[in-house]
Every structure is written in structure tokens, then in C-alpha cells.
Amino acid sequence: MSSLQGNVSPTQPSARPQAKSAPRFAAVGSPFFGILLACMAVIVILSNIGAAKGVQFGPIVTDGGFFLFPFAYILGDVISEIYGFKVARRAILATFALSVFASLTYWVIIALPGFTDDYGRAKQAALEGALGPVPQIVLASMLAFLAGQTINSFIIVRLKARQGERKLWMRLMGSSGVGEFVDTLIFCTIAAPVIGITGFGMFANYVLVGFAYKTAVQYVLVPVTTLVIGWFKRHEPSYAA
Image 1 (tube, one colour):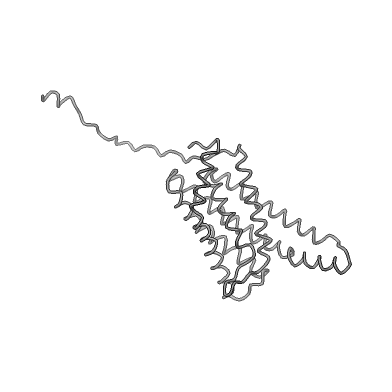
Image 2 (image 1 turned 45 degrees about the vertical axis):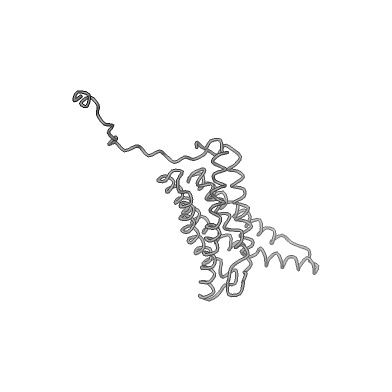
């Protein structure tokens, strides 16, 4: 009996820690990335046009692009989670370049000689009023989007390297808060004079409302964003789930 006990040794847990697996990302060979990039670029460009108009709901001050812009960050979250930081950075730079192209296009349209009758002059004035401020707003948006979205993507990918496929909600919420604050502060600082926002109180209102609204939209839509990311992970051929 003692010999049997001597031959049987209890299973000992390995003292060597298991190697951490690298985070999974997809390649960009499928059509999905192109669709996401196109949607993000269109949303940013339309938001820039809408931002030329100041909007006021009672004491709340914002701009005409407020309802659309948060979705650019949601798409940025999807791209970062599925394709990684390098691809997300390319998407940000592509959106940046397309915004510049759109702004140059507005400038050419305004500069072209129009009809000289009353209707032609009225349309020219309307174009100048609507699209004239856009280059400065585009500058504000590009710098803000470049900084905020890069930080947003970096946080998502770094957290994913630690968490793997777990705690997606934490990555989405943590990155959104930091990225949106940087984006809002830069954008509002540059764009406020063009929109017509003057005085520190009005400016502070603009910054705080913009940050609170955009962050709240992203937080409320975290369950939807999680479902969308899950769908892409299941259907993106190169994502090794």
C-alpha cells in the first residue's frame, strides 16, 4: 500500500505562466473595410457642413452637425477593434484627406463666376454663407478628429492587447470618453468664432454640451456597437475568432 502511494504523485500546477496570445485582427482584403471607411468619411464631411450653423435649444448651444458626428467615432471603434491600430490610422488619414478635398471643392465652387441676375447673386450669397466658413471648420474638424480618433483607436487596441476578446464594453466606453474630450476641445476652440460663439460662458457651454452629448450617444449605443462588432467578427473572413 505504501509503495502504491509512493508511485502516485498528485498533479502539480505548472509554475510557468502561459504565454499571452496576441490580439486578433482582420486583414483589409474583404469589402467590409471599404464600406466602413466610406461611411466614416461621408459622416465627417457632412458633419463639417452642418457645423457651419450654430444651433441653440434654450440655454444649450451646439452646431448643426451635433446629431451626426458621434457615429464617425462609433465607426472608428469598429475599425479599431476589427482591423487594429495601423488600419484605423490609415482610415483616419484617408478621412482627413477627403475632408481637405471637400473643402477645396467648396472653395472652387464659390470662386466660380455665377449668374449676375438677382437670383444668381442670391444663390452666390447663400453658398458663401453656408460653405464659406467650412474651410476653417474643416481645419478644426480635421485636427480634432486626427487627435481624438487616434487616441480613441490607440486606447482600444492597447486594452485589447491586455483583455483579448473580453470586456469589449470597457474598451468602447474608456476610449470614447478620452477621445471625445480631446476632439471636442480642439474643435470648439478653432470653430467657435466662425460659428458665432463668443464669450467664455457661451464657449464653455458649447464645449461641455458637445462633449456630454457625443459621449452619451456613444455610451447609449455601446450595446448596438457591440452587436455590430460581433457581426463583423463572425463574417469577416480573415478574422480568426
